[in-house]
Image 1 (tube, rainbow over the protein chains, first blue to last red):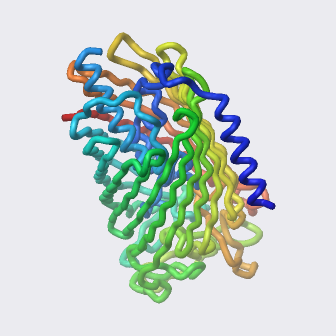
Image 2 (image 1 turned 30 degrees about the horizontal axis):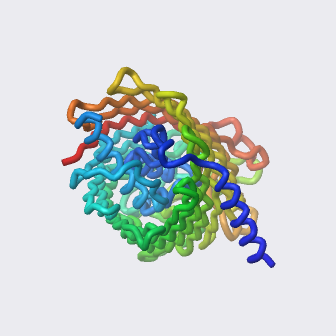
Image 3 (image 1 turned 45 degrees about the vertical axis):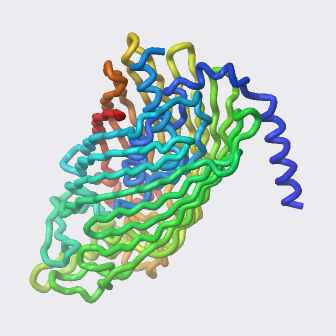
Length: 71
Length: 437
């Protein structure tokens, strides 16, 4: 039952998402480098490292933080 | 498009692909098939400094991406950082000077009356390396695989990760899945203390064992969705389970009188602690769930990047993180980006500012402020400029501040009259340069 619900939810989500978005020729703004969600990976990794060592939460954006004896 | 702009976009496209590999997330579809430079490099020099002679860290990072065409790329990241300074030990301030044995067990250090004890023996250098490969898999999928390694004096990390993503709906929707596993070895200075054992006199190591380890499994499910011509949204769910040695081997708790709240006094034989302190004890597993959402929206030329993260775990910690950045172009080649971040967390259910001498020892206890209740905020800005050759240099300056409190019910006797939860302030200064060839 749970699996069925998950599949239905996934289908609904994808179906809903199909109503969103743009045509390939409308990607002029999205194609700008600063519109990438991962425009500054090194800075994001440094931030994860800082906050991982000072707070009880890490990651979220990706597999952030970790691999450090600082926490 | 002139050659300079083209060059810069090429670098950014390669960096984006590499960043996705690094972060274990799905790559957005490329804007346009172009001939890429073979190598793209992103470098940063970071200076992090806390006030009052607490932690200072200088780190250098370089990420190099080799593009092999057809969306296949190899990303290498190398970083080195040096850490010095003092860190709160977990012991509380007292009405008299306090002497502690250093983690090595070879010497002592003393904290003045009324001051929160800081252990100033920290000094470490860390080297980290990550390698990631990403490539298309069939027509619709993109796969990535990577390994990570880091080493410092008392800690070694070895990890591996895999990622898979698929585009739907004319590449407006991307579903991604990632898994990462790591095995870390902890070899503290002086050995791993037995949890809740007492700090001993100089030269005595009966409460220290050799080394220990932990492993961490991370899973990530993400959806990236183009909402319209100017807005893109990403939502991630992450699961993380750590097992093994999760203590901070250098953190202690003060054992206090149940009425006065003062640390119990002992007389060392030779050199040693003049109060009773016990090493912390955390559970040997921790399961975290988090939801992270971020959005980028272009208001004409300026771009707003906003994100929110909620985390909950089985140590009863809950946290909320809110971040916003507004990238504002200054002329054709420069930008300024003011940014703010707010963070708040609740305390772990075993967080204790001190232990009383009359109670039976609890199974778990930690006075580490990072497991306590606190709020934090970061404010700052970043400035970046593109050079004539399409490279970019940037600088960011941020101010980070933490304000915490001990739960009122945990205050005993005169403890509330002394400083207990010292505020933390830090400056973050970073220089970055990205280039390709």
